[in-house]
Length: 427
Image (tube, rainbow, N blue to C red):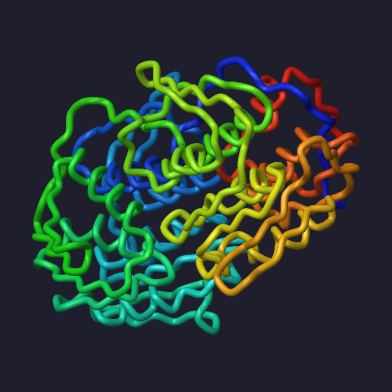
């Protein structure tokens, strides 16, 4: 039987909260640590499911991991094996990123996962690895992948319209090949995520040249140059839900965010402006305050993970809001566009799809929903977004499969409880 979470009605948001570390930065840093020759140390990792999957993968490949308080020491290295077999759990980034690690060996390399990742297409991975000489067997274009053969030099062409995650993996691995690699990318949709990859690589002493994110040139035979601790910055994706709570319910100080971050979801601050809210910075602390909110239009093509919190925000603002970029949602943990329409409709919110937009007609100013039973679709961002509706609910909201939050923000319900100063009952 699926678990359930009862979210009681909330009225006021306030206080201070520490934002969890970014799993996007963490997975990239973990991968680079595995490629280093010396011990490297990471701090401020949030050990969510995706981060733990990445740690498990590099340990399986041959890295040694030691925990010391909030520090993680990693002795990098890929041990020679007759066969490699990794499991990425449900982590889309780690699945594609560590598939690229197969380029570092001629031995058989098997990539598997579990849950929703097993239904997500891997055609881009198969095509790219094949271009570089690999033989790839799959289950009708999906996991598991069985990769074998010699890695060969050449030109690589990628379609960036669906996902940037494989490009991230290729870029991270390319400096450790024994040849230079030129990559041509068409229609890249997630430029901020690639800039994040390049930033982390620079922090580890690796260089990549590119021309407007279309042509990448990576010299082979590079090595990592880093001696000090790498600190993972706060997660703007997780913070976006806290920002929505503050906009609707009061004010909040969020600690640990980087105001100059490369994370795509920092664009949430543009939504704060568009919706009429206020934000300011005190050092590295972000302060968000509510105001008389107005409907907004926002293009989330380059930051599709913002769709769930944006739908929740729009649902609590009187009038019609539009969020563009629905085509980016098809192959997430759930079919997020359909899931958002289905579950928010259960709560009495008018959400529809018009071409590439989600159109949300929000509640009137003093209107409350009657609560109800909703499903997270085993999607962490859905669970968090639906929880936010308790700020405009007169009755309890019952969320099924709430444990999905462990993928990125394991302490979300505790943090939400803290900032709303309400006790939450588990069922």
